[in-house]
Length: 150
Image (tube, rainbow, N blue to C red):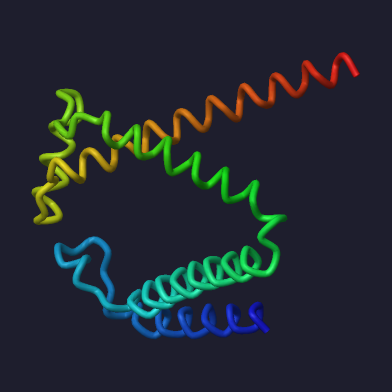
């Protein structure tokens, strides 16, 4: 059922794009004013929201129905939140000199302002990602060493 719904959305998107190609000129100055991709972008956003809601709902359902089996996942999620909380609070919130130009370009093109909270959130996310990648690499190496001696 979900696959057929996805095929239907793709077909509708392709029909809307093909029918609007005669008005779209990617080399003109107003190439960002086109609306032929709006259905696809809106459908993608909607599907992401539905998938996120389903993930959270089914996760909570399985935690509620099998709490004892879910305790390891809950502990892992708590550790992930603790790592992010520490990384967020240790981030400076000030742009580093080597990305200052990129931030200014982004702010100018998007008409937004990067606040200290935004920069702390981005820095905390990057630090959390680096820590989790290093932990995954270490776990991989240690498990292979352990399997070598088995």
